[in-house]
Length: 80
Image (cartoon, rainbow, N blue to C red; front, side):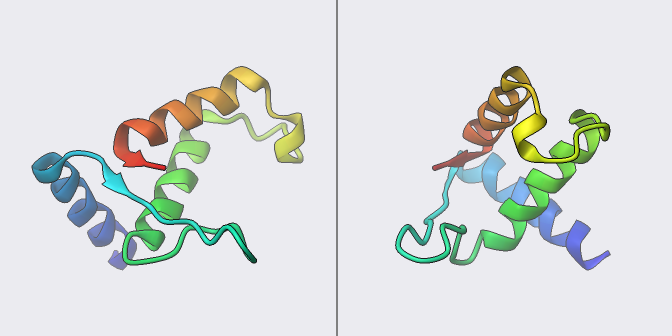
């Protein structure tokens, strides 16, 4: 439930302020950092759960169209 509450809060913020900026650590981990990190990671997971077929064993085997659809979805919600 806590994760769902974070996503609801994030959704309200996006509606009020528009796309959010997500800083990435580009020197060591290449992961999103900062206050919206948890919500960003959860959003990726939710999108993948709903839209990426589970017959793919690795990200490399996901079709380019499916990867681009995920990127487009994230660009609508976040600035990155």
